[in-house]
Length: 196
Ligand SMILES: CC(C)(COP(=O)(O)OP(=O)(O)OC[C@H]1O[C@@H](n2cnc3c(N)ncnc32)[C@H](O)[C@@H]1OP(=O)(O)O)[C@@H](O)C(=O)NCCC(=O)NCCS
Image (cartoon, rainbow, N blue to C red; front, top):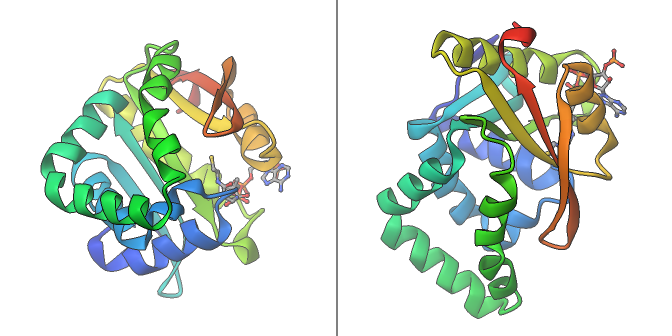
């Protein structure tokens, strides 16, 4: 069953992110920072879990225009996020390097003018290969279509074969490649209509 993500899903979702996401750099800012961001994505984005036998097997987070979305998250959780980020940087000053690179992400990502972006997706390793990620993506695309959003984009790491094959199978087209946070990223785009 696919249903909206709620706050009570966050421990399971954070486990899926922390343990199974392909090279999850963001977790270096701490579980609490990730919890604040995911909470913001529940309120302002499109966030779903795939649940079976009472267990969260996978999740997806997407959002409307990413720059606006992140601005809203920062505004809403300003102080809490600031405190968490400062604590993480004090503990690991190399994180400052990641923070100063963020504006370049938005610049490079804006090569695609899509109004929506798939942000995070992860399926438990024991449940992979069953079509769960495909079903989660299709759910988001359907809602985007209902909201008259015509194009969607997504960034992946070039070496993440599984997600790149998944996206290409769903008809996403690579638009650009760029370096971000020390990795080769691929920016994909797809027309929403063609997917539903
Ligand atoms: C990428 C991921 C979400 C795919 O989840 P999934 O539920 O197994 O995907 P699906 O079963 O819907 O697979 C659909 C298609 O994706 C491709 N695919 C999925 N896993 C693959 C793998 N390990 N290797 C190659 N292609 C793969 C295949 O084309 C597959 O179609 P097929 O089964 O007909 O060959 C999953 O591997 C995962 O959680 N990875 C770790 C988290 C992650 O890296 N997220 C992306 C960060 S940007």
